[in-house]
Amino acid sequence: MGARYFHVYLVIQAITSYVAYAADPSPLQDFCVAIDEPKNALFVNGKFCKNPMAAKVEDFRFRGLDIPGNTNNQVGSNVTRITPDNLPGLNTLGISLARIDIAPYGVNTPHHHPRATEVLTVLKGTLYAGFVTSNLPNGENRLFASVLREGDVFIFPQALIHFEANIGKIPAVALSAFSSQNPGVVTTAAAVFGAEPPILVDVLVRSFQLDPQVVEELQSRTFG
Image (cartoon, rainbow, N blue to C red):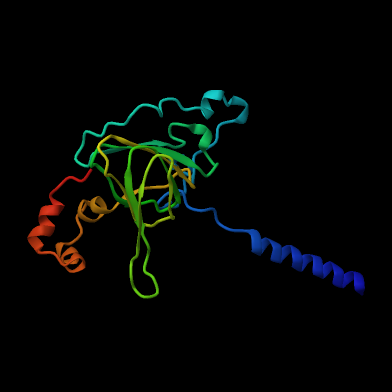
């Protein structure tokens, strides 16, 4: 009798352990539409893996992060991303990097990464950087911002809107580390006013309390 109950106990433990530890992986893309034919597959929450016997040292090395990005654009910034697309060895490791170049008085405009927390390290220059919380219990959206100088580190929690602005007179350079191999990036202005097809003007008028002509003007622009 005792042996039978012990056997049942082991079965229950196995089932509960499976329930406790089994979980879907965190998403690495905005969506993954199911398909019937594998031949049509393009992306499987990561990238397909090379046979480990065919791996080369070049798969784990990237050169060129010392090269400044071109900031000659309307916002005065450039982001050089290091992901499995240009450093294949990162695949499945859950991390990625980016070099951020910002011209004097330029800005890395408000944006968020839906799948990653970001750790920003200033290598050169002076940045004003911050993030905005999601709705707090009192209904506020609180800003956490600081002036950052060479050697300073700042954290942008996952999925929260954040920004960096160069408030100095020399080009600024920062290195960012992400807790995902594919953090994703949603640039706030471009997503809201540059969506295709465009969001209905009435929706944006009510949401932002703007005149319809202002909304239409913003929707006609190209956001960098």
